[in-house]
View 1: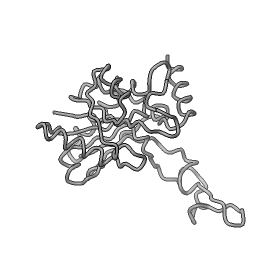
View 2: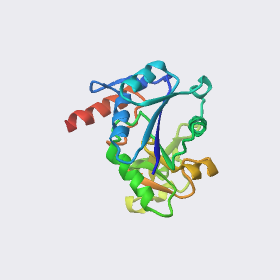
View 3: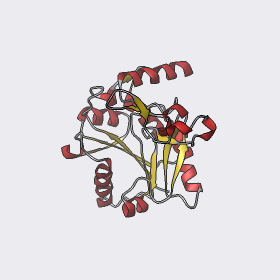
View 4: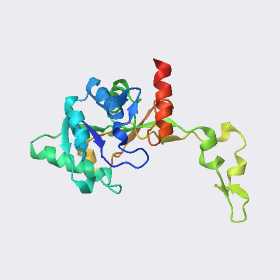
Length: 232
Protein backbone atom coordinates (compact mmCIF):
# COMPACT_ATOMS: atom_id res chain seq x y z
CA UNK A 1 0.00 0.00 0.00
CA UNK A 2 1.24 3.47 -0.91
CA UNK A 3 1.23 5.63 2.22
CA UNK A 4 2.32 9.25 2.03
CA UNK A 5 3.63 11.16 5.04
CA UNK A 6 3.19 14.95 4.95
CA UNK A 7 5.30 16.93 7.40
CA UNK A 8 4.04 20.54 7.55
CA UNK A 9 6.56 23.15 8.72
CA UNK A 10 5.96 26.81 7.97
CA UNK A 11 8.63 29.36 8.79
CA UNK A 12 6.56 31.79 10.82
CA UNK A 13 5.97 31.03 14.49
CA UNK A 14 5.29 33.45 17.33
CA UNK A 15 5.53 31.47 20.56
CA UNK A 16 9.04 30.23 19.73
CA UNK A 17 10.69 32.04 16.78
CA UNK A 18 11.66 29.57 14.04
CA UNK A 19 10.23 26.87 16.29
CA UNK A 20 10.70 23.93 13.94
CA UNK A 21 14.48 24.32 14.21
CA UNK A 22 14.46 24.85 17.98
CA UNK A 23 17.09 22.84 19.84
CA UNK A 24 15.84 19.80 21.73
CA UNK A 25 18.57 17.76 23.40
CA UNK A 26 21.09 18.81 20.77
CA UNK A 27 18.88 18.19 17.71
CA UNK A 28 16.52 20.48 15.79
CA UNK A 29 12.87 19.79 16.49
CA UNK A 30 12.29 18.75 12.87
CA UNK A 31 14.86 15.98 13.19
CA UNK A 32 12.63 13.93 15.48
CA UNK A 33 9.78 13.77 12.99
CA UNK A 34 12.14 13.14 10.07
CA UNK A 35 13.64 10.19 11.95
CA UNK A 36 10.26 8.75 12.94
CA UNK A 37 8.91 8.97 9.39
CA UNK A 38 12.01 7.35 7.86
CA UNK A 39 12.02 4.53 10.42
CA UNK A 40 8.37 3.68 9.84
CA UNK A 41 7.90 0.29 8.18
CA UNK A 42 4.62 1.34 6.55
CA UNK A 43 5.23 4.83 5.14
CA UNK A 44 6.38 4.65 1.52
CA UNK A 45 6.97 8.34 0.72
CA UNK A 46 7.74 11.38 2.87
CA UNK A 47 7.49 15.05 1.92
CA UNK A 48 8.18 18.23 3.83
CA UNK A 49 5.71 21.01 3.13
CA UNK A 50 7.32 24.37 3.83
CA UNK A 51 7.77 27.96 2.76
CA UNK A 52 11.12 28.25 4.56
CA UNK A 53 14.35 27.62 2.65
CA UNK A 54 16.31 26.77 5.82
CA UNK A 55 13.81 24.04 6.65
CA UNK A 56 13.95 22.84 3.06
CA UNK A 57 17.75 22.63 3.06
CA UNK A 58 17.73 20.77 6.36
CA UNK A 59 15.21 18.29 4.95
CA UNK A 60 17.31 17.64 1.85
CA UNK A 61 20.33 16.93 4.08
CA UNK A 62 18.15 14.30 5.78
CA UNK A 63 17.07 12.78 2.43
CA UNK A 64 13.55 14.13 2.85
CA UNK A 65 11.70 15.23 -0.28
CA UNK A 66 10.70 18.92 -0.23
CA UNK A 67 7.64 20.59 -1.69
CA UNK A 68 7.59 24.35 -1.28
CA UNK A 69 4.18 25.85 -0.60
CA UNK A 70 3.03 29.34 -1.63
CA UNK A 71 3.10 32.21 0.88
CA UNK A 72 -0.69 32.29 1.23
CA UNK A 73 -0.55 28.74 2.59
CA UNK A 74 2.05 29.65 5.21
CA UNK A 75 0.33 32.50 7.03
CA UNK A 76 -1.09 32.44 10.56
CA UNK A 77 -4.55 32.06 9.09
CA UNK A 78 -3.70 29.32 6.59
CA UNK A 79 -5.91 26.23 6.94
CA UNK A 80 -4.19 22.83 7.05
CA UNK A 81 -6.83 21.34 4.78
CA UNK A 82 -5.83 23.81 2.06
CA UNK A 83 -2.16 22.85 2.51
CA UNK A 84 -2.98 19.15 2.18
CA UNK A 85 -5.15 19.74 -0.88
CA UNK A 86 -2.37 21.74 -2.52
CA UNK A 87 0.16 18.93 -2.15
CA UNK A 88 -2.22 16.13 -3.11
CA UNK A 89 -3.05 18.04 -6.29
CA UNK A 90 0.63 18.66 -7.07
CA UNK A 91 1.39 14.97 -6.58
CA UNK A 92 -1.60 13.95 -8.71
CA UNK A 93 -0.14 16.03 -11.55
CA UNK A 94 2.88 13.72 -11.56
CA UNK A 95 0.61 10.67 -11.50
CA UNK A 96 1.06 9.84 -7.82
CA UNK A 97 -1.98 9.06 -5.68
CA UNK A 98 -1.34 7.37 -2.31
CA UNK A 99 -3.98 5.02 -0.95
CA UNK A 100 -3.66 6.73 2.42
CA UNK A 101 -1.72 9.61 3.90
CA UNK A 102 -0.57 10.57 7.36
CA UNK A 103 0.00 14.07 8.69
CA UNK A 104 3.01 14.30 11.03
CA UNK A 105 3.37 17.65 12.73
CA UNK A 106 6.95 18.39 13.88
CA UNK A 107 5.69 19.82 17.17
CA UNK A 108 5.25 16.22 18.42
CA UNK A 109 8.89 15.13 18.87
CA UNK A 110 8.13 12.20 21.18
CA UNK A 111 5.95 10.48 18.59
CA UNK A 112 8.02 7.56 17.25
CA UNK A 113 8.01 5.23 14.26
CA UNK A 114 6.39 2.64 16.50
CA UNK A 115 3.51 5.01 17.26
CA UNK A 116 3.09 5.70 13.55
CA UNK A 117 3.01 2.04 12.56
CA UNK A 118 0.73 1.03 15.43
CA UNK A 119 -1.76 3.76 14.49
CA UNK A 120 -1.70 2.88 10.80
CA UNK A 121 -1.96 -0.83 11.57
CA UNK A 122 -4.99 -0.22 13.77
CA UNK A 123 -6.70 1.74 11.00
CA UNK A 124 -5.93 -0.89 8.36
CA UNK A 125 -7.04 -3.79 10.57
CA UNK A 126 -10.47 -2.31 11.28
CA UNK A 127 -12.71 -2.82 8.23
CA UNK A 128 -15.11 -0.08 9.34
CA UNK A 129 -12.50 2.61 9.95
CA UNK A 130 -11.26 5.06 7.36
CA UNK A 131 -9.25 7.41 9.60
CA UNK A 132 -7.37 7.52 12.89
CA UNK A 133 -6.20 10.33 15.16
CA UNK A 134 -3.88 10.24 18.16
CA UNK A 135 -5.36 11.25 21.50
CA UNK A 136 -4.47 11.52 25.16
CA UNK A 137 -6.68 10.78 28.16
CA UNK A 138 -8.08 13.98 29.71
CA UNK A 139 -7.33 14.18 33.47
CA UNK A 140 -10.56 14.20 35.48
CA UNK A 141 -9.92 17.68 36.93
CA UNK A 142 -9.97 19.17 33.41
CA UNK A 143 -13.26 17.64 32.28
CA UNK A 144 -15.96 20.18 31.30
CA UNK A 145 -18.18 19.35 34.26
CA UNK A 146 -15.33 20.06 36.70
CA UNK A 147 -14.47 23.46 35.21
CA UNK A 148 -15.54 26.74 36.79
CA UNK A 149 -15.72 30.31 35.54
CA UNK A 150 -15.81 33.70 37.20
CA UNK A 151 -19.11 35.55 37.17
CA UNK A 152 -19.42 39.30 36.57
CA UNK A 153 -19.49 39.94 40.33
CA UNK A 154 -16.24 37.97 40.79
CA UNK A 155 -17.84 34.83 42.20
CA UNK A 156 -17.19 31.33 40.90
CA UNK A 157 -19.81 29.21 39.23
CA UNK A 158 -19.71 25.89 37.41
CA UNK A 159 -19.09 26.13 33.67
CA UNK A 160 -21.75 23.46 33.20
CA UNK A 161 -24.99 24.12 35.05
CA UNK A 162 -25.12 20.56 36.41
CA UNK A 163 -21.41 20.45 37.33
CA UNK A 164 -22.06 20.36 41.08
CA UNK A 165 -23.68 16.93 40.87
CA UNK A 166 -20.44 15.25 39.77
CA UNK A 167 -19.01 14.50 43.20
CA UNK A 168 -17.09 11.29 42.42
CA UNK A 169 -14.63 10.32 39.69
CA UNK A 170 -16.75 7.27 38.92
CA UNK A 171 -19.59 9.53 37.78
CA UNK A 172 -17.41 11.36 35.28
CA UNK A 173 -17.21 10.38 31.59
CA UNK A 174 -13.98 9.18 30.01
CA UNK A 175 -12.91 11.83 27.50
CA UNK A 176 -9.98 12.21 25.15
CA UNK A 177 -8.17 15.21 23.64
CA UNK A 178 -6.19 15.34 20.42
CA UNK A 179 -2.54 15.47 21.40
CA UNK A 180 -1.39 17.97 18.82
CA UNK A 181 -2.33 15.74 17.10
CA UNK A 182 0.82 13.68 16.75
CA UNK A 183 -0.87 11.43 14.17
CA UNK A 184 -3.64 12.06 11.66
CA UNK A 185 -4.14 9.32 9.07
CA UNK A 186 -6.93 8.84 6.55
CA UNK A 187 -7.61 7.01 3.30
CA UNK A 188 -7.06 9.45 0.43
CA UNK A 189 -10.34 8.73 -1.37
CA UNK A 190 -12.30 9.22 1.85
CA UNK A 191 -10.50 12.49 2.54
CA UNK A 192 -11.32 13.78 -0.94
CA UNK A 193 -14.97 12.79 -0.56
CA UNK A 194 -15.43 14.23 2.94
CA UNK A 195 -12.81 16.98 3.09
CA UNK A 196 -12.09 15.77 6.62
CA UNK A 197 -9.06 14.20 8.29
CA UNK A 198 -11.55 12.29 10.45
CA UNK A 199 -13.26 10.53 7.56
CA UNK A 200 -16.60 8.92 8.39
CA UNK A 201 -15.43 6.40 11.01
CA UNK A 202 -12.40 7.67 12.91
CA UNK A 203 -10.56 5.52 15.42
CA UNK A 204 -8.62 6.81 18.44
CA UNK A 205 -4.96 5.99 18.91
CA UNK A 206 -4.21 6.63 22.57
CA UNK A 207 -0.75 7.85 23.57
CA UNK A 208 0.75 8.50 26.98
CA UNK A 209 0.85 12.06 28.40
CA UNK A 210 4.65 12.07 28.09
CA UNK A 211 4.65 11.04 24.43
CA UNK A 212 1.85 13.53 23.77
CA UNK A 213 3.85 16.67 24.58
CA UNK A 214 3.05 19.25 21.92
CA UNK A 215 5.65 21.99 21.49
CA UNK A 216 4.05 25.42 21.56
CA UNK A 217 6.01 27.26 24.24
CA UNK A 218 9.50 27.21 25.77
CA UNK A 219 8.02 25.39 28.75
CA UNK A 220 6.88 22.60 26.41
CA UNK A 221 10.47 22.31 25.18
CA UNK A 222 11.62 22.08 28.78
CA UNK A 223 9.16 19.25 29.48
CA UNK A 224 10.13 17.34 26.34
CA UNK A 225 13.82 17.67 27.19
CA UNK A 226 13.18 16.40 30.72
CA UNK A 227 11.35 13.34 29.36
CA UNK A 228 14.07 12.57 26.81
CA UNK A 229 16.88 12.98 29.34
CA UNK A 230 15.01 10.78 31.81
CA UNK A 231 14.73 8.03 29.22
CA UNK A 232 18.39 8.23 28.28
